[in-house]
Length: 291
Image (tube, rainbow, N blue to C red):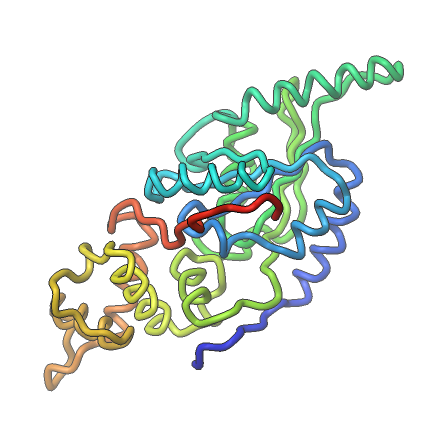
């Protein structure tokens, strides 16, 4: 595959975008979930533009923060806040409750209660809509907010296919939505990182290519110790993959490297966090106001 744009926007994602635009009429606030290891590539420009147009209160949640580098996560939070956004980091899998979101959601609930009382309307809990690209941790966040496992979760994109309203009585109502991938992914490097974090389907890119480009990114970041170390590393992605397989002893007859097995191992180790807390995208040196 060449280093060009990858276009993939299935019909169910187009329909999900249209449904989401309608569902936003019922929302008091939107929780936009980003992958903490990949904050820039897990944003969705078209979806963000729609949210701004609708004028809904928007919070960015950097999920899976326990897998990302803490210093990089803090830098990303600073960057998003400098852009005028509200942003927090959350471990959406192991934690419980709203965590760092609690003060903000309590203020939202108080504001809604005041507005409804002023209009002589019956009280109701805030309505939250959870959005994001596939497999960034949306359903896990919902489960954390409602305190019990109600939404389907998984380590592959596309687990959630339809909207789900879940009520946590006395606190909030939460809607989980299907992951919506943006229609055009620019560059092999970005596609490989999305594949490495499980945000695109496996058929979007061969595992060998995803692992090779992931290794190249880790070497560039100085974070490849779990796979490769040393000063005389190869310079090309597929050479890095072969060197990794050779060092692990993943060999076929004739001492050829089993690149498929090597790729599976690399991707599994990274996805499970066994390579350490690694952030694949660092924020720009200077953040400008505006999305």
